[in-house]
Image (cartoon, chains in turn brown, orange):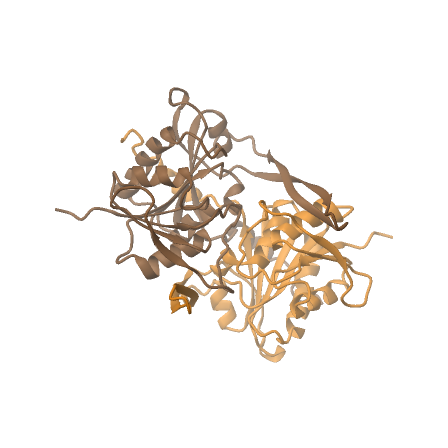
Length: 259
Length: 259
């Protein structure tokens, strides 16, 4: 009999968030699950790691079942590092992160703690997938997302994921009957137009809250934004070799003897 | 007479770090300088942004000169967002981040606050460069790095930087006579082999410190690691479209009807 797959589960909304509880539930159908996730919400943490402070790690018991769970005081990337070096007895067959409460499509991949955990696993040579549902509510319904997470994770376990690539999966907030299926896409070009809400403290000191709106600058029908708007689950292969190879030739025309 | 270039300067080591003071000095030779930088060190912050807390921004006067300086309680990416939306009267012609105390070559680009500031500017359509010196010391000698930062920034102002690309510049810690020049490179494939230093608090609770060693897995002579080891300043064009386009065909062979 072959060994069951070992699956590492993490997220950025914190270990008690409904999204990770849903993901743990579905991953237990596919393998042995170990959870190492932040003890508090870490949204927008990007690929932060903790280098100037210590990390706490604690065995916790949240839901029933034979999964092993640890809560960690660090960032999502810290959780993966600690799992790999200190907790897991062997390299996991898969690392899944999420299910995030809210979108990580397009440029959001850069700011996403969910995706940074997946990227960290990818850097370690572990097949990895980040899952997000386009619903920020704490009480979002993860049932449809769970079904697709299972299908995609099963494919990853059976086929492997191309080397140095991790998957960014986003699920539209739709009832199952309106879902059109899964679409492999590229990252849409987009940015955030921030508006800072400027206020004054009781002591008269200015402060700001970051708010803003997402602007899709890309009208291609092969992008994740197009897929999500049209009822598809988007799957974007993401790489951590950030080299813009196409720009090397141009830069080689620069005159570096200028002073 | 043409307007002088407007240059935004930021970093991740904090606004009083010697590295940013050196960068400000040299950028003042090229244009009008506005500084918006973190009020405290933000190393390893990756592309974190502050969404669950407020931001303070304060006009500060550190060195002499006509640069305008603001200290910000947020991350490097926050600093760029605040600069663009709240402080600068027009879009800057260049954003430079650094000079970082320590390397941001290879996979370090992912964890780097210095580079996340440059990437944030790039996302906003501002030509941007991150500079790092391979010397972690507070009292590092930035004189040689300053010279090369000027040359590269001058090229960027004159030629522009290819769209959707930012530059990651690393300078080896060598005296000027041993510098071989500037080399445009790709990001070396590498990772960190972490070792967690496990300790116990006086109360008997375990905690960990993240330590580790950098492992270069790439022996190409066109990489940033090769350049730095051989006495060159490395310039890597970095992109924020993370799509692994080459993996799309493979993923399209997956069977998404599996349940």
